[in-house]
Image (cartoon, rainbow, N blue to C red; front, side, top):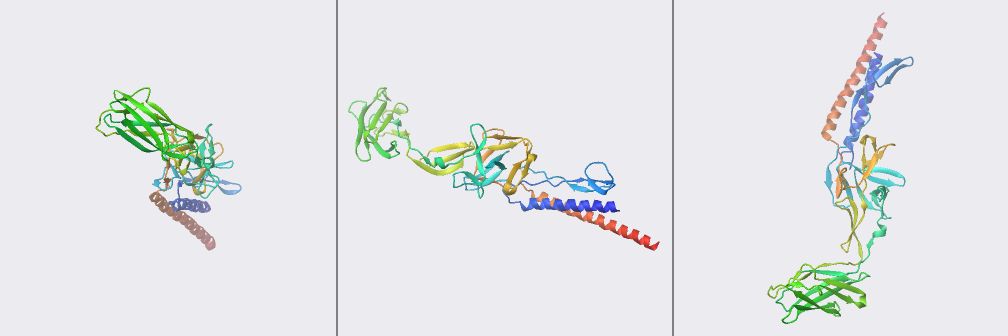
Length: 391
C-alpha cells in the first residue's frame, strides 16, 4: 500500500509538470517565433533496494508510476503575418536566422530588426546582430555605416531610341539629366534640325544656362543612322564632362508626317545618393536603396539548418541555442535546401490551442486519478490500523 502511495505521488508530480508545460505553451500563444513543447508521459518503474523505495526508468523493478518525457520542440512553422517594417524578417520554409554577439551565436525563426548606432542590423532591443555570409561561407555581422552614401558616377553615354521623322524639319529633346564627376546635375537639351533636301540633321546641345555644349551632324542612310555619325560625343569642358550620344541601335528615320518619337531611352551616371531603404531582396540579400535609385547588396542573410532540430534549446524572446556538437550548416536563401528569407513578415507561434486544451483536460483527469490513489491507499492503511487496534 505504501508502494501505491508512491505511485500516486509520481502521478501528482508528473501531471503537475505537464500542466506547467501546457501552461507555457498556451501563455506563449502570441509570442513571435515560439515553438510549442510536446507533453508526453511514460511509465516509470519503482525499484526496491536496501535503501528503501526509489524510482528508475526502465523495464525492471516492481510497482509502477508515471513520468513526464523530456520536452521536445515542435518545429512546425507558424503563420506568416504581413507587417509594414522592411526589417521584420521571417523564413518561409526550413532554417533559422543567425544572431551573433561577440563569440556567442543564437538562432531565431523571425524577429523585429533595426539599425543600431554602429550601423549593425540587430534584433530590436538587444545587442544580437544579424549574420550574413562572408566570402568563406561564415556568418558575420555587417555594418552599413561605410555605405550610408552612394558615390556619384559621371554620365558617359545617352542611348536614344525610336523614330526621327524624315519629313520633319526640327525636333527637340529637353531636360536630359547628366552628372559630372562631383555628382552635380546638369540639364541638357538637344535640338535636331534637318538640312533641306537631305537626310542630314544638325544636333545642337545646350545646357540649362543656355551655354552651347556642341553641334554635330547626324546622317541617315535608308532610314538608319550612318556608321560614321551614329556615335556623337559632346564635351562640356567647363565641367570636365564628355558624353557620347548613341544612335547606333533602335533609332530610325522614316516618314511619320511631322511627328517624331525619338527619345533618350537611357542615360547612365548618377549623383550622390543617401540611404532611403534597408531591406531583404528576393535573393535573400541585405540590400540598401539610395535616393539616386541605385542599390547595393551587403551580402546574403545566413540561414542555419540542423540535421537534428532536437539539438536546439529554446531560450527567451524566441531565440534558440545549439548544444555542443550540433550539426549545423549555413546556406543562403537562394539555395533550394532552405527556405526563403522574407521582408515585412513575422512568424507567429505554432501553438495549437485546441490541442493544448485537450491535453489540459486529460492531464487534469490524470491528476485527479492519482490523488484518488493516494486517498484510497491512505484509507486502507487506516483500516489496517483499525484492525490492529481491535486485536
